[in-house]
Image (cartoon, rainbow, N blue to C red; front, side):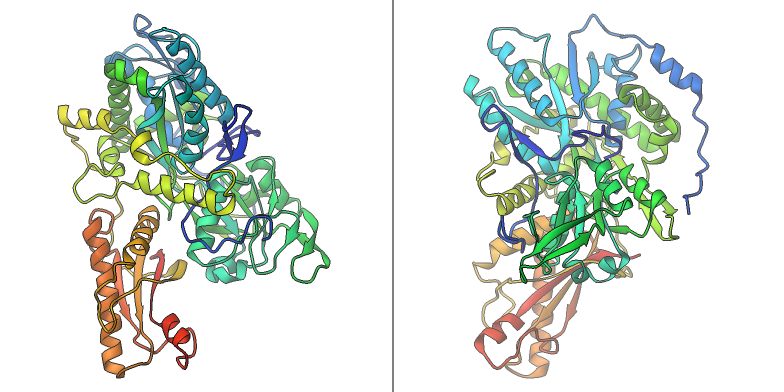
Length: 588
C-alpha cells in the first residue's frame, strides 16, 4: 500500500478482538512452510509528471455532498492507491453532484482510518445499533476496507464478537476495489535475490505480523528457509527479526545502521547484529533508496500479485436489507475502475481526490506511485518503488472464481495466510471462519447478471518463449506418484492443492516444473518418467484453473536421475530423489 500514518498504518498486524480487549495476531501465511517453532527459532532523479492543477485540488476541496437526500453510508479505509476507483467514483470526501456514487443513489462518506482495532470497534458499534432497532445507524462503520491476506485474522476477531448479537450479525466480504501490485515488498542485499539461501542469518527490520512481513514469510516458505519468530535470540540458520514501531521506523532502522546484541541460538554467545533487510511499503522503500540504498526488492506484490487485494467488508444483515445501496456502491466503484484503466486523465483526477480524502501527500505523489517506478538508489542500484491497481467488475468475477476456469484467488489468499498465522503463533489463531461464511459474491453476481462486464480482467500474459531469468523461489514438493508411473497417488491431492494455492497467489510469475527420479532402472526410462511426471503436474494445474495457468506460464523440465539430492544407496535417499521441484520467477 501507499502512505499510511506513522502509527498503525496499513496495519496488517492483528489486533483481533478475540476477547474484547484485543489480542495481537495477524496474517502470516502458507501451509507447510519451514518456519521454526515459535519461541525458538545518489538521490533518485525527479520524475517528469503531467501537471496536476492546483485548481483541480481546490475544486475537490470545495465540493459538498451531492445527494444528501439519500441515507449516509460511511466507509472507513486506509490511504491506499488500490482505492483509486473508490475515490474517483465518490468525487471527494462525500459523494459529489454528478459523481458515479450519486448516479447510483449512494451518499457515500469516505473516512480515513489507519487503526485496525478502531475499524473493528466501529463495525461492532454499528452492529449494536442495528440490533437495537435502528435501520441505518448514524454511528459506526457501514463498510471498511483492508488487505485480503489479513482478512482471516481480522474477521475472526471481529465476528467472534459480532455473532454474540445473533447469527445474522456477521462482517463479510462483498467485493474488491483494487490490489497492491509492487509497493509492498521485502528488501534485502542483492546477494539474497540471486541466492535466497544467503538470507539465512540475516536480520530484518519490520512491523511484525504486518502484510509486508507476510511477503517475507511466504518467500521463506517457498525457498525452504526457516523463520525465527523469537526476537530475543539469533539463529544463524534462519531469517531473524527486529520489531519496528511502524513501516517508517523499519526503514529508518536500516538507514541508521541499527544494531542489537542477541544470544546466538547455537553457540550461546552474545553477538552484535545489525539490520541488513527491511519489509516495508511506499514511502518506506523510497526512504531506504534515497537515504542509504544498497537494498533491492527481493520479492513484492508485483510477483505475489494476488496476495493483497483491497477487500470491502460490510454487515451481512444491513446489506441484505439494502442491496440497492451495496450494489450501487460496487457498480460505481467498478465503473470508475474501468475509467482509470482507460484514461490517464481519470487517474490524475483520482489522485487529486486521494490527496484531499487522505489529507496527506500531493496529487503528484499518488499519481506517480500508482505505477511501479524504476529509480536509482543512493548507491546506484536500480530499485522498484510503488505499484497498485484498480479493479473493475471483470476483475472481481475473476478474483472470486466466478469466471469459467478461474481460481478463487481471494479464497487462496485468505486460507494460505491464515495458515501462516497458525504455523507461527498457533495459540493466537487456532481456527478461522471458512470462506463460505465470510464471503458473499451475490452482489457482484447480480451486477454481472444485470450488465455483463464490457471490459476484461487484468490478467498476466505469458509467451511460449518466456523463461525464468530471475528466480523468486525454488522448492521441492513431495508429490507422490504410483510406482513407475506418472499417475498421482490419492495422497498427492493435498499437496497439489497447496501448490495450486501458492502459485495462484504468485500469479505474476513463470512456473518451471522439474521432474527428478532415483537411479533405479535405465537412464532413458528414468528420463522419460521424470518428464511424464512433470507434465502430469503441469496438466493438473492447467486443468484446475486454466485462467490462472494460461499457455506459456508453466514449463516442464526432465532431469531423470542426474541431479540427486541424497545418495541413492539407501531407501531414504532414493525417496528424497524422487521429487518434483517447482521454480518460480520472472523473465527479467
